[in-house]
Amino acid sequence: MATRGLNFVSKAAIPAFVGLSLIQSSLYDVKAGTRAVIFDRLSGVKETVVNEGTHFLVPWLQKAIIFDVRTKPRIIPTTTGSKDLQMVSLTLRVLHRPDVQALPKIYQVCLPFCPPSPRHPRRPPPTALLTAPLQNLGQDYDERVLPSIGNEVLKSIVAQFDAAELITQREAVSNRIRTDLMKRAREFNIALEDVSITHMTFGKEFTKAVEQKQIAQQDAERARFIVERAEQERQANVIRAEGEAESADTISKAIAKSGDGLIQIRKIEASREIAQTLASNPNVAYLPGGGKGTNLLMNVGRA
Image (tube, rainbow, N blue to C red):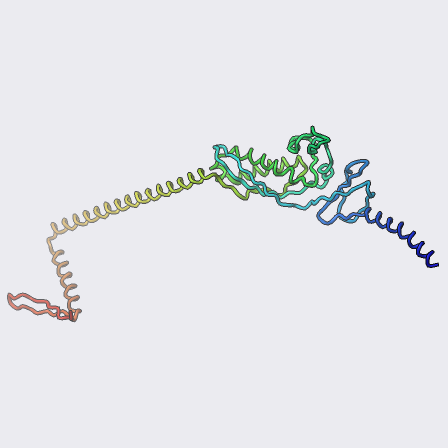
């Protein structure tokens, strides 16, 4: 009886294990922020994009390819020449994501995009994806497309501006790059959320020339300030001299007309101020000479 039970269990375990394996292999999960594309061995890539959740497929015959559709950053560095032949190093930051509805086109296989192999030695190189009409990019679409079109757009736009214009018109340059790069990325079913220039440097010769120009401008401004200050001082001296001359002429005319009474009054006032100053000083003694004697002022303070 026990042997019969073991046989039954062993016979039932194998089909149960195979059934569980089939069920497990026929289920797949699409996590949040991702989408799936189904590759069928008979019909190829299906046009339907599978949303988030748990889904079924036919084991071995079908395969689920998961794409991350969240916005991701990408840094694109390049070195190119400006309109006046100055070397410029630029770093572009791009926020990108795939067009969800075009995921089957992004993944599908097309011979013009496949890399050469011993079985297909005549296939063109991967750079052909920039001119071919069908976008077979695969899951690493951003690695294949963004560096190529980013460098292409950057070099074409920077070549239209002088080095000085790249600094003074940076916003206009950034807008041109953003517009052209978004248009170029749409051809490959890639949506760009934002494009911005994060870094811009020039060659040593241009940087040195800019520094020398700034120094020359500062020296010129300093010299102009010195000249303007000297001119203002000269004008002030002229005005002061003219005022003193006019005052002296007025006094001379008044003396000639009324006599030197005003001068005598000024002398008396000056003598009074001197006497008050000396009287308030305890260290000064006044000794009158009397008659025709000489008046003396003695400083009796401590040495």
